[in-house]
Amino acid sequence: MDIKPLRLGVLLSGGGRTLVNVQRRIDEGTLSARVAVVIASRPCRGLEWAQAAGLDAHLVPYKTTPQPHYSDAITALLDSAGVDLVVMAGFLSMWHIPSTYAGRVINIHPALLPAFGGKGMFGHHVHEAVLRHGCKLSGCTVHFVTNEYDQGPILVQKAVPVLEDDTSDTLASRVFEQEMLAFPEALQLLAEGRVSIVDGVARIRR
Image (cartoon, rainbow, N blue to C red; front, top):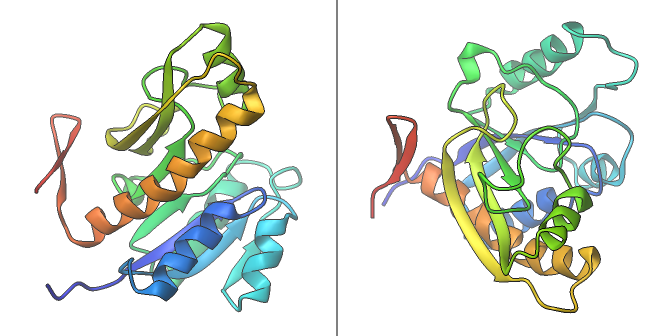
């Protein structure tokens, strides 16, 4: 199959582990994509890594750039890079997604949506909530992003057991191992044109 690599715009706010994983898969030839631009919402290790790797990396500081200028600045950088798909890789700021990017933004959430999603549900807040509720399964969800928190169509999910002696740290580590598999899988499905949205549900052609 002749697949045109996806041009990715990666938004991040932290360590950049998801970006590193995506770039490694690209370098290995197992992911049909190219990182066209990286945008960080604050100085962080992910931005430093992208710069050291020679990627087109930019800082758009969330705390000092008021809306709507913040969202406009991000959109302008994505447009300039000719991005096909936007990847939220641990992005903790609000980008108001314009209609031109509807259906072209994905995120990974560290729980099995629609459970434990919504405003304030990120990172260890999610894992602590899972443990408080006594869940026996957790996992991660790759989903399309809309301007409502964690409400977009679900693309890929992977589950892990919740163990009796789990802490938020041990559960987070086990979930993150699956995130490293789920995100490249979702990206490759999109690169191969195997995903369609029907009545708000992501359908995958096998």
